[in-house]
Length: 341
Ligand SMILES: *Cc1c(COP(=O)(O)O)cnc(C)c1O
Image 1 (cartoon, rainbow, N blue to C red):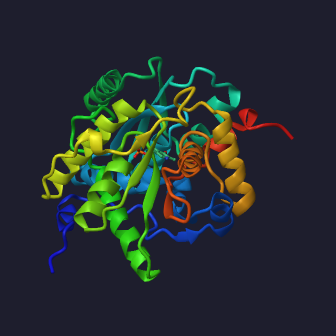
Image 2 (spheres, rainbow, N blue to C red; image 1 turned 60 degrees about the vertical axis):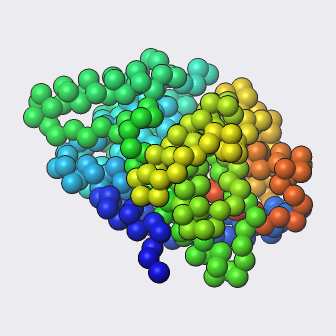
């Protein structure tokens, strides 16, 4: 039988991460919630603290290498995991990194600007640039293009990783492959899962899983938990990215925003900002399972999972995979907001 996702192989890929990542049982946390809980450990993808951006950037860096780039440019929040992993990926392939840090989280104090991902960016020797606007992806990309132009004038060969939608969502291919990993791991356990829960931000993870599971004939509900924008806008984003990805892997299909499962109950008061449900989720995961979650993404995703179980949207007794997308360096940057000893 032919491989339904073989077309992914047509895209240049730089191997950066450890895969397959473990699929761990989480029996105590599962029992506390009344479900059978499994955790896909994409916090363990390896490169410079790992996370979901490692799988995504394998395709960007593959393209950068194929084009002979010597410098990668990337934009993100001050505590961006994408920026940190892009800088690390560049280094691993012998490239420099210029990173643009956007002011998206207005309450950032000293730790927010110096610790966590920023510290790692600096250790990696990335060149840091500040961008005063925080929620305008097109403007962030335009500023990055200007930086790239200046570098090209100096004789460098820059490669820009854009953030606004509209270009081929290369990073999503990493999650089409991750879907296959999960299906293979589920088969080895002799079980099928009832649902997947993941954070939904740029939507590359969420859309990649949707497209991959569908192509592999293993479709199950993928509950995306909004971390950046409200459910209506996020559903449109996921549908758009999923449709583009489906075309890229030569299984064209129009995904309908109305059929995308997203929830923004854990989002308030906004991107990168904590609430009590996130604190509760981080505490429960740490105390029941020694499973560390981050405050920006996986803490919100787990808060969303807990809310879905409590509301009955995920039925008691369900077999659920929680995708741990990483982000752990941020716990140090948020130390003063996570309580005191
Ligand atoms: C970026 C990120 C996400 C969101 O994934 P998208 O593919 O952007 O939707 C989730 N968790 C962590 C830790 C991240 O860094």
